[in-house]
Every structure is written in C-alpha cells, then in structure tokens.
Length: 471
Image 1 (cartoon, rainbow, N blue to C red):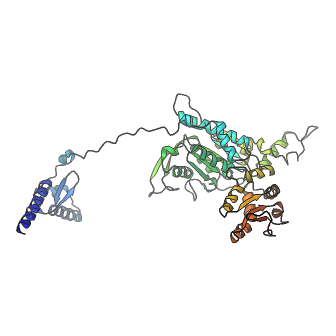
Image 2: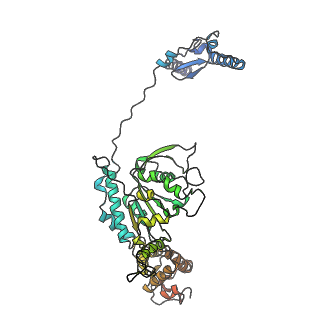
Image 3: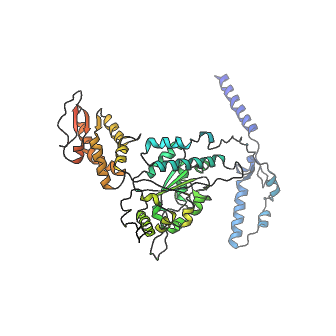
C-alpha cells in the first residue's frame, strides 16, 4: 500500500513540473510583477499580459479625469507603479502567421463542347411543348448564341452582344413552361420574377434588384454561377406607361427606366438571402453582363393596336381593306412591330435592349388535344399515374379528349383551362374509386364530359361494365 501511495505522489509531482515547464512565466506589462506575485493575468493581443491591479488603477484614473473634464494621457503615465507603454514594442510584436491556402484550379463554368446545338435544344423542347415551332427555334438559337458568348467571354477583341428576348403571346400558350423546360435542359440557375410586384426604389414593393436576388438564391448564393443564369420576368406588359395620369408612375415607366442598366449589363449590389436591402443583411456584387434576360407578357389589347395600324394603310378606294378583315385573323399577333409596342406603353430605350422579339401562337382545339396526351409530363399521364397507385387503369377515348378541348376553348385561358376542367370531372372518380377494391379500369367518355352520361367502370378481370359512375 505504501509503495502505491509513493508512486502516485511521484506522478502528481511530475505532472506539476511538466505543467510549469510547458506554461512560461507571465509578467505584467506595466508593473513587471510575475503571475505568482500579482495573481492571474489579463491577456491582451500580441501576447501582452496585465495584472488586475494595474488594469483597475488605469480605469480609476481615467474615470476620475473624465469626470472633471481634464483627461490627459500623461497623467496615466505618471501613476505610481505604472510604467509607460512602449507602442513600438506593440507594433514589433510578431503577428501569428497565417497559413497560405493552396489555390484551387478553377474550372470554367461553361464548356463550349457541352453546350447543345440549337437543333438538339429544340428537339428536347418538342418533347415537352406542343406547337410554337417558331418560338422554340428562336429561343434555341438565342440561348445557344448567348452561351457561346459566355463560354468564349474575352477570347479576342470581338465582343458578342447579349441576346435578351421579349416573348409575346396570349395567356396559357406556354411562355413560362418554355423557359422552365429550357433551364432544366441547360442545367443553369433560373429565376422567375413577376413584374407586377416591382416598383421604383424608395416605394412600397420589390426593388428592381430583387430579380437578381432571386437568381442568386437559385444558384445557392454562388455569385459566379448566378452570373451565367437566366432571369425570366413575367407579366412584363404590366409595367407599361400609364395613359392619362397626372401622378408619378412608380410601377410603370419608372420600372422600365430602372431596368435599363440591368438588361444591358452592370454591377448590382444585391442582398444575400433577402429581397430588400437593410442594415442586417449582407450585400454582394453581381455583374449582369452575362445574365440572359427573357421577358414575357400577354399584352392584352395589342391586337387592337395592330388592327388599327393595318386598317389605316388602305381605308379608301378600290383597294381598301374591310374594317373587319383582321377580326378573326389567328396570326394577327405575328404582325406586331416595335411601334405597336411603343403605342402600347413600352419606352423605346427598354425595347432597344430586347433585340429578339417574337410571338407565340394561340392554342387551337387540335393543339389542346395533343397537349392532353403527347408531352412527357402530359396532364392525362399525371392522372393515370395517380390511379395506377390504386392499381386502377385510366383511359380517355378520343371523343372525351375532343369534348375537353372544346370546353377549354370556351374558357379562353389556354392550356390552364385543361387542368381546371379535368379537376372538375375527375373529382367524383378520385373520390369513389378507393372505396371499391374490385374496380380495375375506368374509361372516360365524351358523354360524361358533355353531361349526357357517365364513365365506364370495369371490374378486375372482367370486360362487362358496371353501373356508370356519376350517371
């Protein structure tokens, strides 16, 4: 027992000696007393130590002098037991060396060989978007040229200008869907902003720079990645100049003027992780020179402006046009000019920064039928997958598709009307089918869509129809 006790004593003594040798003796910088004499030291930067007595004397002296208004630094130097601080020794104190980070080889954001050719871009768009052949061709070429410009950057003295786009088309014709599909194909960050919420800086609403903030968020706050992204500004027609107004147009012409430098290319300070600038949010600088801007809008009543211009060309004489000649022209929107857009309310400086202007066709009944079943993500395929999870097969006959397209044409909201109609007619089916496990197949008929009958419901393994649901 005594041997063990002696060993432990020796171990504790050795540990104490090691601790003493490992920790160097600390001396007060002012009174030069050691830590054993003055107590625990207060550590300051550059390996400076001050005892608590000297620190307290310094504070007391300063407080006393400041209360009388006669504070002088020389009084602090003449205090008993306090020596003068040598500033040169502070400067000459060795600063901790920072380890140099090895520079990582940065790879280019875009590789010219990996950019798909225009015909390949259009072929992919064809799988998702029905019709709009001209629009898909224009977008494929514009995007390909833009990313060639980004990839080459400053290859030589020839600078390729940016090809921002303005797409015009009626509601529900696929403007937003085209852009979403394009961004998915190119695997670049995409921000979709709404022009209706934008106002001039200083007014209630989103600042113009907020569209770049959304792109930065889509790129996971990677500035370099965001500077090669796509910004789609929807409802661009809502910032047209207001006519016959005496008030300041803070959400119309002022927004167009504020977007000029943004479209052309400039360095913009944007908040990280927020839409509005404030003192609590850090800012970062984003260069919009290589960001592709695509603007889209329905431009209601633009057809009337085009029609009025065309009717003025020949209104008297043997070769005069009839006033109702263009009333039912499905291709009237394709005849749009920059002057028509100026009449609508877009300022010429804004239109000049959107060199690629093209239109999208209104959807016909045949196109709506194709939209229902042909695209990769077709609406009918979505409902078929929902019922397939319940082990039920869903089919639509041709007459039902035609009836759905007819109803959608009456609503005049484009492809958006298709889902609204299907939601209405599939409600009872989606509600009733999970009740009965014996149901194996549902066939939607034209009579059910037109309200003259119901869908055909077949049992599992049988060809004989049951009672029609909803009849």
